[in-house]
Amino acid sequence: LQDEILQQQDFHTSIPLRVRALLPSSFEENGKGLLIRASFVQASQWIDKEIEGCNYILWTSSLINN
Image 1: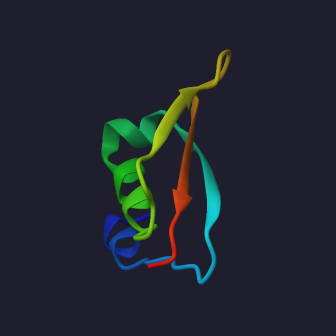
Image 2: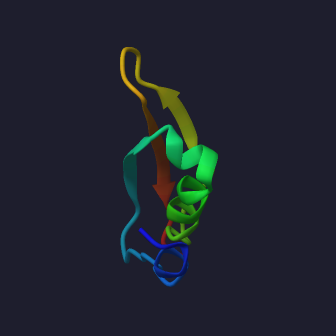
């Protein structure tokens, strides 16, 4: 995915909900993870959890309807 495309994405919700994103750990190194999480503009604090035995990180946040 090109960074420009990721920066153009904004996801919104009309109801409170929890979102989970399973992203490759390489996305933290190349900045794509931050861009993807930033596209959820209603997200509260993101919590990360490394998945043992693979190269993925599970990111969880609550989306709050403003």
